[in-house]
Amino acid sequence: MIGTVVVGIGTAGRVRIRDLLSPLPSSPSEKLSLKGFISRRTLENQQDIQQISLDEALSREDIHAAIICTENVSHEENIRKFLEAGKHVCVEYPMTLSFASVKQLCELADKKGKILHEEHIELLTAEYKQLKKDVTGKNLVEGTLHFTGGPLQPGFGFIAFSGIARLTWLVDLFGELTVTSANVEEDKEKKYIKMTAHFQTKDKSPLTWIEERAPGLGRVKNISFRFDTGVMDCLPVAPRESIGLFMQDLNLFGQKLLGLVSSEQLQAERKRILHCLELADLIRELSQACTH
Ligand SMILES: NC(=O)C1=CN([C@@H]2O[C@H](COP(=O)(O)OP(=O)(O)OC[C@H]3O[C@@H](n4cnc5c(N)ncnc54)[C@H](O)[C@@H]3O)[C@@H](O)[C@H]2O)C=CC1
Ligand SMILES: C=CC1=C(C)/C(=C/c2[nH]c(/C=C3N=C(/C=C4\NC(=O)C(C)=C4C=C)C(C)=C\3CCC(=O)O)c(CCC(=O)O)c2C)NC1=O
Image: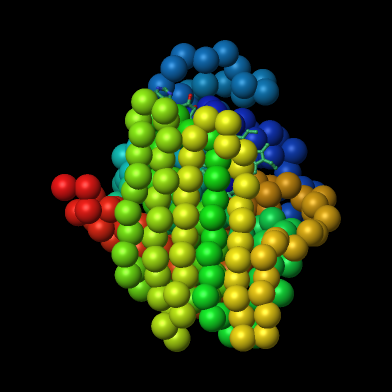
């Protein structure tokens, strides 16, 4: 069994505990055994699971893996500590808040011979799987992805990082991108923020990513993709799958721990993750440059 701890008890952390306690039968997640949770606060038992200290988790030999579910700003430090201690890590996206630290941590994972897995539930939704099928084989002329949502809590970092799921969609659909320009409009008092990033695909087709957050805005993704064969301006409707998104991700992490994922797939995933976070870093640089 792979002894596992959950770090950070928010929405994602609670779902992780739930899933670890009732893994999908005959799936890799059955091999994960929850040993405790870690929080900076002192909390009561969560779903009958006890809190343990970070130091205990790092030193115990029956703990082999950590799932990091804290706010984004503390991912980097947590990942580093668990990898240094020789533990596998699953981290909720975004891995960290800079491209440089992601590169370092990937190297550290390789040096230690441990899995460093970044959750990407946005690629696992039924609607995304259908979208990917619908887009495959079409030639993009131009496109826009406009996300809206409520304000994030402090500690979630620059908006291109907290919104990495949208960028990951674009890269997974249209391949590697080049950033051509980016800017951010913000009204801190109103908790309003809007980022606009422009890209080009390898074929020089323009793509725009807008990420907009304000009180009262619902979590919505609007797409408009123009192909040489016609326009796609709404997401496909697909029935929800029976297996939850975080459970699907837990199984992928479990498969990696059991050595069931090919090195080609691991490398392709790492390449995509590094590319997306590098783009996020560039967007931040460009946005900051234009506010000075
Ligand atoms: N909620 C979701 O559906 C998804 C979340 N994620 C990622 O999961 C991670 C966690 O997100 P959520 O669970 O939604 O956030 P959340 O705000 O519900 O939880 C964040 C955790 O950090 C804790 N925390 C923050 N500052 C703290 C402090 N100073 N001291 C002690 N505890 C502190 C919160 O109490 C909570 O345990 C993020 O990286 C997010 O990007 C990724 C995909 C989906
Ligand atoms: C209801 C309040 C609610 C909160 C507080 C919430 C938080 C939340 N959802 C996220 C992603 C996500 N959240 C979901 C889905 C959900 N996540 C859920 O908590 C629920 C109930 C669903 C519904 C099935 C998905 C699929 C993503 C991946 C990002 C995406 O698809 O763009 C993220 C990561 C950052 C981001 O991509 O924006 C946060 C912080 N989501 C919510 O829906």
